[in-house]
Image 1 (cartoon, one colour):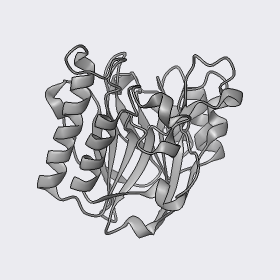
Image 2 (cartoon, helix red, strand yellow):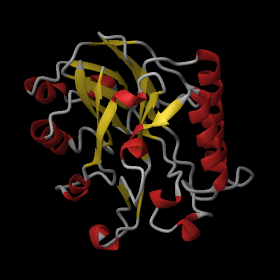
Image 3 (cartoon, one colour):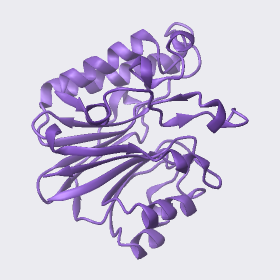
Image 4 (tube, helix red, strand yellow):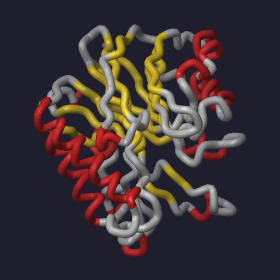
Amino acid sequence: MSFSLATWNINSVRLREPIVLKLLQEEAPDVLCLQEIKSPADKVPTQGFADLGYTHMVVRGQKGYNGVAILSKLPIRDVGDKDFASLGHARHVAAQLENGTTIHNFYVPAGGDVPEREVNEKFGQKLDYLTEMRDWFRSEKPEKSILVGDLNIAPREDDVWSHKKLLKVVSHTPIEVEHLAETQDAGGWVDVTRQDIPEGELYSWWSYRAKDWDAADKGRRLDHVWATSDISNAGHSSRVLRAARGWEKPSDHAPVFATFDL
């Protein structure tokens, strides 16, 4: 079984339904994982997705904030969610394909602007969220699983436009990178994107604040595709659809793709 998968922080699924439909029409991934849908589950605009063959969906929604959804052409079953750090936020949902592969869709907290727990509660929540993810993976020992989502951390020096300038900027600070590495190691997760594209600058997010995001190219790789080591070699064809950042009324994130032969 071969299937393609994409992950995309859409920054409001209702506001940006037209570009979700554009992605589904033009790229046609078998599975699309969305983050920051900013919608209750019953308000997600499902008809257009269904008309394109995406008749299967699991959602954890929230009015105006957060929210994650998995759309699929392939049959999937809902296998639950976890409220890491007890925030009461819709930030995780998992679904399982008929071949037994579990897909985890995550939206890790952004962490605010100041990278200090003592003065910024949101930064502490982000670190706590990652710690609880780590501990869960240590206890659960995931197998035959894929983890995708906006993890809100760019771990490598070539995952940001300037390693030196961003060392004290939330999303690339050493403590966040360390927490993410511990989480990855705890589950035996392999970074499929960097397995496929091991060298060079690679970004999936560009700020709305840039007048010309494409020319400035001050990006960060915040969106990730991981797989457990037992299936990581089945992943290939990774890419970032940078062009989507320039679509009409875009998200500030671009979709990240991979294909798995399982």
